Length: 291
Length: 309
Image 1 (cartoon, chains in turn green, orange):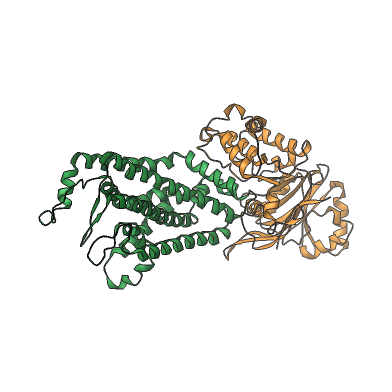
Image 2 (image 1 turned 180 degrees about the horizontal axis):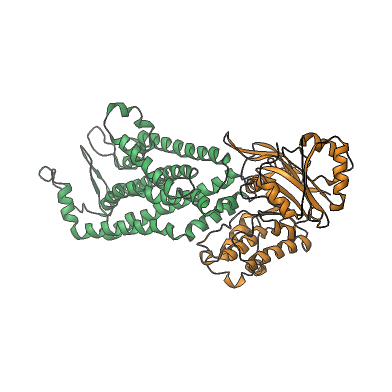
């Protein structure tokens, strides 16, 4: 198994396509950081428009923590496409090249091969998120410095002490890793049905877009299925930035407003990941390799 | 002689309508270069893919090295190498990197020097560090063979290995097959739709058409130019075949199944009058006895129209 995973990672990181995702993430983060560095004040004025008359805010609001949060909100919607580029190609790409049949005549079971490929796709996903964390979090901390984190939610504001933020990012990136692994497992599953990469990549994105629309639509009939859609829970990382308050309405340092929501979201994502992988194995074990 | 491959009643249906392989039985003995002959679409590749467990049979049994394939796949595949149809490899990697990957996947630990030596055997040492995407079809085919051989297999399956090759490439593959068999004692199953290719390397062969076995036997006997292949038409071919099988002519029957339209035999042309006489004595109503003067005529004849029930 170890050598199989090694071979799969070797193949992934020898492909130029792999680095498109890393390059795209770096370019997007660089542009956002550049824009905020040059014109962050205008962005803040726009963001705080309704509050500026009722709140007086001291300190460095546009700090590395806030910049990272802004970027995560934007990027974690688009990263699934970059994940799908590799995960949805893991089987279909091999079928397209004809190498799938060569892999399957080696002395490993199909399940073992799939597991190795899935582990490799997951490692790629995690590395992409580590890359995102390095650039978005550490890069922004270096460029913008650190301070307390001021977040504007739909109907309230959250103020997190500087010392109470970093661990939340660790949690948020951990959660995002789980969500992106679910995306990878979906791409991996769809990859079984095709003999070229384009179909499963487009299909993965289509499923995510379709489910995301269902998750966000406020139509009562869809509320029944929303809790079961993995897209509903992909934004669960934001829960790490909601803090509990005591009876005096003071923030409790180190707390999370709704930890059960995070756990529930993580369980739903985990079940989907396992479900997609098991379905992949069941389909692939019976599949005739005609490519 | 021990069988390396033993196939019984192998059948593959795609959907309800199409039967790609139909009740096929054959055996490949140790040390054979076994020719697998048939026209395009005859079921050769489907059969080879079933032997490699890439396709699940609808019915039938496959034993390789005396072990049932389905239950012993991993153990069997450690001793098998294969090139399946057009060569497939990672075009963004070099020849050396491709070979290294398949060496690792085969569970074989080889040094760089050893891998380069193996590339040298197929004439690719000078291009070892070049991306495979820049290779010609012939070079890819040679690399595919090196990849199939990297685990030093006892059994090698080559599916149409000369497709797309120039005459020199075809000759190289032929020499390689002969070398593997004679010098290294490997068992080789090689498929082709060209009789002339099989004729030059095979020790035994099978001819299939529309998924059915037409003939299987020793190449020397089948290619014996002193004998003629004879196509016989009678009023009742099934009954005629049964009677011939019980007679002194049984050993000369090429096809041991009843035929809708013809029965094939291989015999010295001078024995044709006696055959005719025997048929009449057995009460068989003979419509025609048609000699064909080469196995190629015979191959073309039997693969051009549906024959067997």
